[in-house]
Image (cartoon, rainbow, N blue to C red; front, side):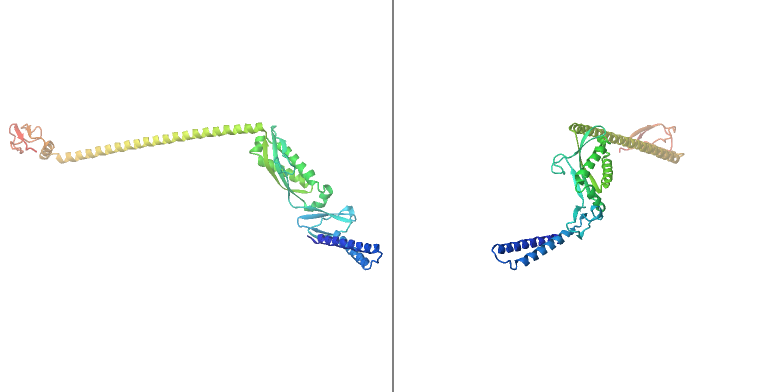
Length: 354
């Protein structure tokens, strides 16, 4: 309770006391008595009541979220040029009055859902897109009064600005802007662009009417039943295409994996074959070198050659017939199985059993 309200309450109490004093005086006069002290009491209470009422009528307290426009019978033009700011102010009683406005943010909602919008029932904005589709748009306009233009707002619109400025401007701009886009653009790629376009236009138009747009909120977009069914079918078909693409991609990955595996096996076989060939070459080279070394060692050494010959025949050979000449390069053997330095006729060579 501010001081103005307190003074008004005290003034009301003073008037009650004055009425009580008046009744007391009238009661005494009706009985043929003198009013006595009732008259001074009546006069005093009336004077106090008038004074308090006058003072209370001239005091105006403005809250921090408020501004006051003073309509005056004594000021030029019928109003004070400056609005009352937060705090306690004095105006001329009975010649001036203060019209209070709230400058905090306000929200005006147009919705198809009952009890959500400023108007009961379906209050969404019906619009047609560029391609002729019908849409219902739910939206909210968050705005406030321009503190520097409160006096002009009072002159132009008084308290009718919500129904005669905010609502018609918002609905008209939403319809006109939606008509510039195809329905699929509104739904997907250009929804943000749509919101920004509406915001820019609405901010400019509200500003021209002494209001400030804080935010435009596109709450929901509803389509006709036919278009909603078509969209659902399109989404189902798109999901099927995406599923088929995933199957193809999986098959391609499996084929690629099989190709890589086969390539790896082929590469491994080639590498193995190359390794085997190199091993064979190396073995052949080693054998060749070994034969060369043995040949060099046996060259001109008949005894060593004979020994190698016999060693290769042993240990399974027990009897061997050899010629007596040296055409084979092997000396003849004695009957006991030992080598002989002479060349007797062919004889039977006997070897011990293994």
